[in-house]
Length: 313
Image 1 (tube, rainbow, N blue to C red):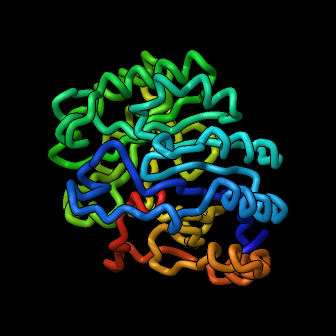
Image 2 (image 1 turned 60 degrees about the vertical axis):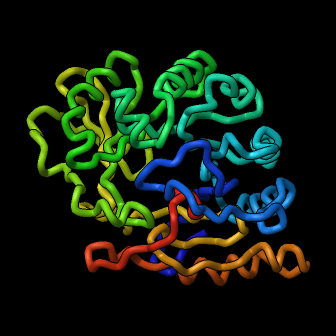
Image 3 (image 1 turned 30 degrees about the horizontal axis):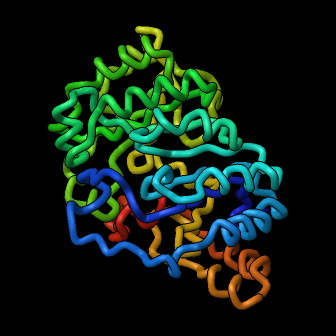
């Protein structure tokens, strides 16, 4: 499946819920969140019907996101159903809080690996950022994933000047010791994060002599990977300072059944309504692919005001 710029689209990110058990400051407001009703959200069966169409059209990789995907009722049934459809790789992005109790069942259902969002190793800073989260829950979840073979475990760390920029060396050392992959991500000004855009950090502010580039894309995705002098594998995802839109191979499906062609766009194509009324969803997808934009426009100050928990990251 190709878009009008010749990009091969083989990756679908699916938001399974807008709910989350944390309230991270750059993702969701502390209160006043208008959560969706049951009728507004796709059912497990509807997700699987849409995935089956995308699998037929060449989607090979599915990533489950949220909100927090592990609070979704029926998440194990969804994973098993996707696996039964023949999708080659099923991954999940999670805050890690519930992984300690769910890692074994996730592996059994067919999940291949996880990315865990973790921005600090300081328990008090973690509690402040997440508005009440317990760092030990996440660390226990990481160990559970390693034990159950949900690997490689990748840690996604958003760097924010004045908050966790002094922890870079500590995070890298920890990742090397734990044999996990650490990825530093530029803060993207979307939704709640727009207010932090002046606190972005970029790779060109770092001592590049500490990093040796790894050839090619050894772990896939948009990250550029390096071997740190400590031996740790570190990735950098630079969606703002080093735009990688020309290689974008992904689409997003939110929990309301909207197809999102670019994370930074407010344009959405409703698949839920035609699915429920018996229309030809495949034809709608075919037309939509041709509308996928060439690139985002963050550097021109065009920001998506939607909250990340409603998009799926």
